[in-house]
Length: 363
Ligand code: SAM
Ligand code: SF4
Image 1 (cartoon, rainbow, N blue to C red):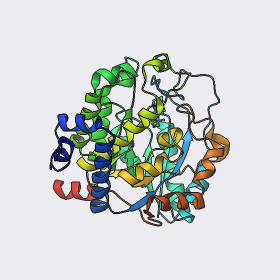
Image 2 (cartoon, protein in one colour; image 1 turned 180 degrees about the vertical axis):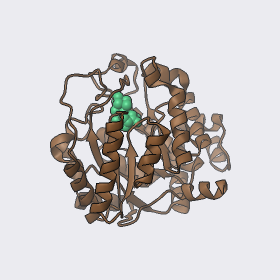
Image 3 (cartoon, rainbow, N blue to C red; image 1 turned 90 degrees about the vertical axis):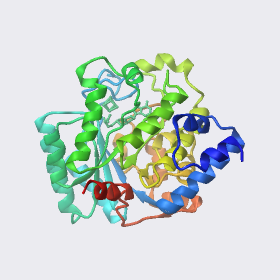
Image 4 (tube, rainbow, N blue to C red; image 1 turned 120 degrees about the vertical axis):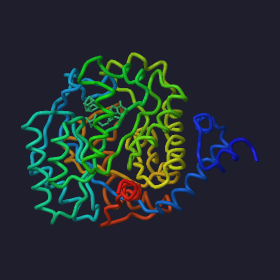
């Protein structure tokens, strides 16, 4: 047995084990992927669940240094979908058996926004017989707001930590109260307390990020006991402050390969969570999401935002836009997922098994 094989045979992985797995050579990488595929099949099965992604608005009050829709970027048009457009996208998802939607937007925290989302949740539920599993991803909010949305039908919430290293976090965000690492962690705790299926995640291949940072991120996600993870490669955007560090980044194909390893290790250390096959992988490799499904991911978020707006939700370079997103049409998606050997869990919520287990532990 070589070093990697003996690591893969352990029940618990240490920081050093994870660091070695992240750097394994090609032959060992194949063993890592075989192991993570085996864990996926055993603990969550070979089913992929769909969440129709609705990019509600690119209006954001924050100024994260990596993000194309940050408030400081004035080089593009801001939009806000109408309620009717959102309800229509939700109905499309429901009628096509997607069973879940994920509504994502820039961060806005005021009573008018809270109220709008509450009303939207009511309208979506009325239009879809309350059958959709609704995920929200709208950044940091107060406990009251999280509770109000939960009470009105949202069951999942995604809030990436981006990096679990306070130091690195500080390099990625302005130094002020609106971008506070501690507050983001606290929000994740609030979400768990309110009762959401709670998701977090990171970006892989950030400037200044080390392999040890990634190992710590993986252990942090486990420690936080999250139910879902969305993680993907960092892809630079020219109109952001972080772009000036582009020359220190790994080439895109290496960031892609590293993100796949992170997903595989995550599947091994958090066996029964839901892991998203991220769109940012598809931005680098057309078959990126399928590759992630093969080695551990079990959730795909086909974009159902009206085509007119997709080009304005540019978080990073090469984000699949209107034309490419046609590949998310139902038939294309089916063909692509069939390629992986998995089946689509149509009309199933596909709630994370981890969530049920976590609640059993609390009771
Ligand atoms: N505003 C909410 C928030 O930040 O939690 C939700 C929407 S935000 C656009 C969703 C995610 O996009 C972020 O958590 C971040 O990880 C990702 N993102 C932003 N800029 C990115 C970039 N340049 N490369 C890869 N992912 C990026
Ligand atoms: Fe706004 Fe989210 Fe982008 Fe930060 S990552 S600028 S909070 S949309």
